[in-house]
Amino acid sequence: MKEVSAAEITAKVAELCIRACTVLPPDVVAAMESARDLEESALGREVLSRLLENARLAADESIPMCQDTGLAVVFVEMGEDVRVNDGHLRDAIAEGVREGYERGYLRKSVVHSPLNRCNTGDNTPPVICTEIVPGETLKITVAAKGAGSENMSRLKMMAPADGEAAVKQFVRETVERAGASACPPVVVGVGLGGSFEQCALIAKKALLRPLHDSGPHPEAAKLEAELLDAINSTGIGPMGVGGRITALAVKVETAPCHIASMPVAVNLQCHAARHAEHTWE
Amino acid sequence: MSVPEPSETPVSLTTPLSDEDVLALRAGQPVLITGAVYTARDAAHQRMFEALGRGEELPFDVRGEVIYYVGPTPTPPGHVIGAAGPTSAGRMDRYTPPLLKRGMKGMIGKGPRSEEVREALKRHKAVYFGGLGGAGALLARQITAVEMIAYEDLGTEAIRRLEVEQFPAVVINDCHGGDAYAEARARWQRV
Ligand code: SF4
Image (cartoon, rainbow over all chains, first blue to last red; front, side, top):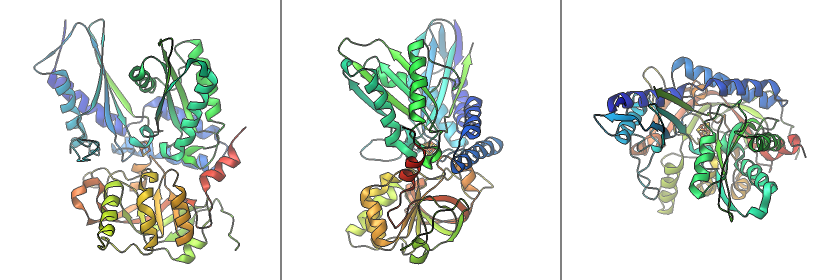
């Protein structure tokens, strides 16, 4: 049995929030650099250079790379043989978010209710997705999800007869509708199959994959390559000023589904693809 | 009327903007903005809109002015302002025509505007600039002073007057009906 204290979780989550918002993961930086080298539009290249400069500046000075430091979406993989001491996992995570957003001078962007719009003042509550896994490890990933790209995400319950062509059309259309609002170059998380909520969740989880990997199975990998090509043919380009690079990567996750269903979720992620993780082993 | 083609070299603009300034701008033109701009996003726009509905004055005179759609992060010690990049402009569309009618000349944001806003830009000779979305750390460096103007209780969403120097943006919608997003796609898309 592995034991982790609530205080330790809080301290780590606070650190992850700050790190996610100030340091762009190396795979994202690498993808942005190769995008800058490949981009044919002069204005597009200029935009990519500035975004890279922005990421460098944020990391060097430990300041947020973007003013929308997001809703904290926290993924927890908890081993069956892990026990949290002196507190509750949820409270420990929420406290970590509260501390991290305060100490890191991060923006508090959460309102109590969608209708009353009153700010909670400390960026809590986070969204927590917990998965129980075998073993003695505890892994926590914090993703700072800004609204610009999140707001342009879509889910559709398609009919099986609509087929792959309709799926592709829906994904491409989602990126087109978003345009510069989603801060391209984007990362596109696609969930295909599952139930209504599972489809959205796997689309979001797809965004956590390293940008240079390819799909979990050949069918997904093929779809990823074709979708990336289709999206990069739209001409939207970096920040919508025109060019070849509209998306850095497309990540497809699939799940078994009902004989009558074909859910498709497209979760858009801006170039500020911020996440940070820690594993207790 | 002939409008010059946009060039890749940025044009310098100083706020407040005149009709003449606006008429000379063409979609796709990079610009560097210097002078005062006012921050306002969702909540501040809603309040201004409600104030106008009650027949009250706006918290600042919008004539000739530029509104920057931004909600900065808290200011860390030793900085003028926190990260301060543009937010999506489309959410402010429904509040925008009345401000244009009162003489506002420009907005800085990101993403497409509604048909109504684009029409209002033509009618009232105003311009919509696209900023560098997600470059909040870098853009904060172009901001040299910050002053609280109104709605302080809104925190990040309050109205502040920012002094900006050589603030980079691109003309997205000009007052002649030009749309840089549409033009960029027409030029770069592959079919
Ligand atoms: S979409 Fe992303 S990069 Fe753009 S403003 Fe929002 S959080 Fe920042």
